Image (cartoon, rainbow over all chains, first blue to last red; front, side, top):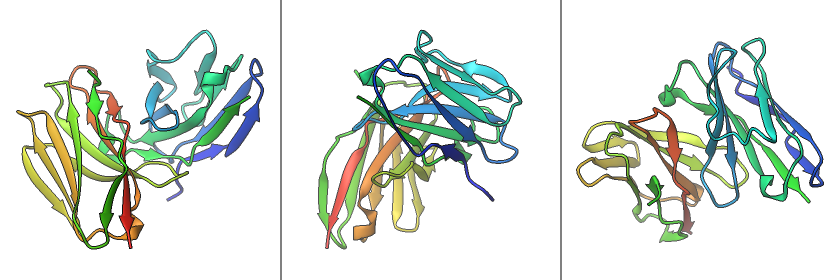
Length: 115
Length: 111
């Protein structure tokens, strides 16, 4: 079974630039999550999708972050414009159903450095 | 008070010893608790889940839950250098059903 795919693996940008991350969840997984993990901290949920609908985006800085999952499969997360404090690993995860964390699988993440 | 608290460590134990990792949480309505292992530069992977008070064993790992004290722990018996990683405690919020992670404890097993 293929895992959660993410790209790119690394990204270095300057502040005020824009960046986009891509995620393809495990086949058949209806729920997709984007987490932000700052160095030395645990993952923090940014946005959660159920199929192509947003379930929770309460911690997404909507003035600069946006995410979509148009066809209910793969997803993109965008930051525009980036700030220094956005430097983090962005983890995508997926699970079969809503809030079923017993089978939550993470991708390898995208490490973002904002200079 | 943080929702999920862990000592950041590092916790250093000799090879073959028992490593004890602790976690406290603030939401009394929480019912599901998870331990993830995260190697440096890698993504978190689930190693244990626990839902009822008491102990749950899986190989060298034992998770312990005490809801009255709002405390969950992970014991690793016969620690190996390959167990060296950050261990993240995660709690499913009773109020929001969202998974809240602690900051993680760095475990270093010395050969």
